[in-house]
Length: 362
Image 1: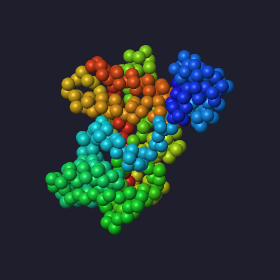
Image 2: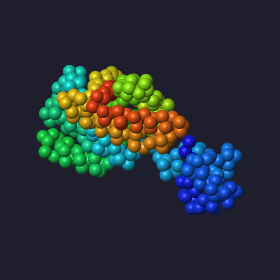
Image 3: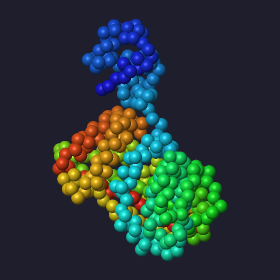
Image 4: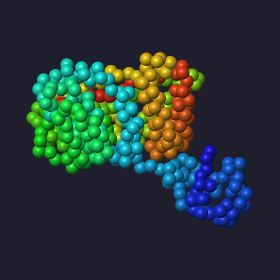
């Protein structure tokens, strides 16, 4: 068990002797508490917590220290800015070019030029996928709050033969006189505190009969579709159950891990018609021994050794509602996973769980 006595003492500016005087024990006792050679009697815990001005949970390592605590805001540009490079790589692991081409050409069957509005467009990922498949003279308008993402998008499309423009705007404040044939989002809805409000904004931006396309994930599907050889190698070690952590996030308005499956219901409530959904058939098989998968293997390895949940350690999980024991279980799993993926004979299977939910404005 890790007690944060030294960290809290130093934060308060006390010496071991000063803390010992306050606790009416010897400074050698304080030293033993801090090194873990001995532990304070349970009757000392409330007094120590009171001296440091923290809860007993913080003192006992059951809650993160103040400087480790993180207010998780998944709809905050600061959060996404930290993950910009990671997200570019991660998108490759779920995006299936063949399946998307099939949807555009054979399911949605766009035969005339299409005016697209992309909310939370980032660096224009969806535009780069849609425009080469659409009829000539189709247009793409991206809305994004992050100026750097807009600059990247403008640079990417600068020498492309497409009609594009980008607006720096908070989607909650978006007002547009132009009406669009297609309004799209990618992984936006699950991270919004007010998804219904945004659905209303998107509906107002559509032409009558226009199509709304929401691409999002159900993380339960991803969890059920993940397996690595580590689970067998480590004597039956199972991947931890993420659902309690995701339920905590959903209850605190951070992100909705089941949003993709909920979207048809929300669209029905907002008066959309012809509501349909499909799920991507992309399944990634990580196999570093196969040279034909070199690029994909590198992408998989990059993502699964740079996740917050691995780098952030125990505090990452405790900030998402897990107990200290559970947080340590998750941290240990990610540490073992990182070592396992370094092995040339390692293997993993990951199902994307990405939904394409689409409907028409009546």
